[in-house]
Image (cartoon, rainbow, N blue to C red; front, side, top):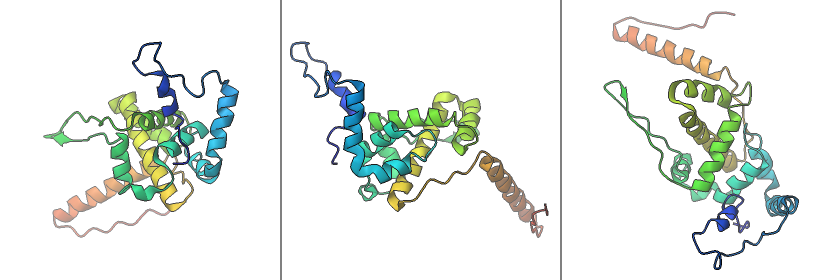
Length: 209
């Protein structure tokens, strides 16, 4: 990467468990927030196109987008796919059921800096009215709690970022009503399959508006 020190990882220089006498002084010690902000923006200048594209995602500001670029780069060929990236980041929550009981699904440790940035974006996205992520966050929060909802939405944001960087495509907002449409479609398919299994010939025609 051209960015030698990532936005998120740069702060870890202050967290070494060494004595005060031997503690290294970060390169940005004594630098004002304005100066640091300027330096970070200069580092990200070669990635203006990718930065702007990622900022189309609800909940992703320039700092989060910069952290994402600093941690994973812009060449997605280094990953085997979106699932590989999500696993590397530690954003693959398990979802296992047995005899109708939901088992505990834990995420792996992964890249703590990237994971933190994505969860922060997910929480922000959950407050973006009218968006798919906000509706997804709301529904999952009601069923599984806010932290698990944030992890699930963070996973979706990271997957979206992967495909946007890989294909150089803009973000496409599905809208808050997407989940309702998806549920209606799934319900129709399930009912159709059940009737066919019972020996009925079923054809579904959408009702005219």
